[in-house]
Image (spheres, rainbow, N blue to C red):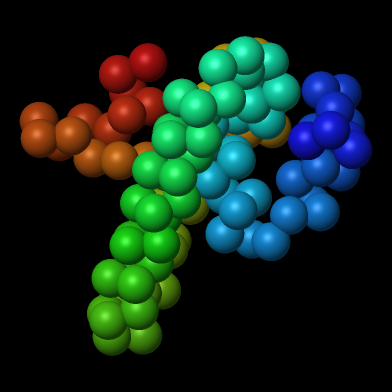
Length: 105
């Protein structure tokens, strides 16, 4: 974060391992840069990272054909969040009522 700063988001994200990059995208690069309470941000980042790891582990248990269909579905409903960051991607989480987190925003 320090090396790339607020304005070089794309370069910063590309420099990260894919798992870390996805967690950073969930929280938003610029939000991470602006954060003043590092303990809270660290906890949020850890929770996002662990959630993505769990999701990936569960995905690997699915048959390959179903994995492809799931990936296509996620791609079709994933869209930019648009909260202070044009390139942040939101990884949808389905709520109990069937809506996604993006639909609640």
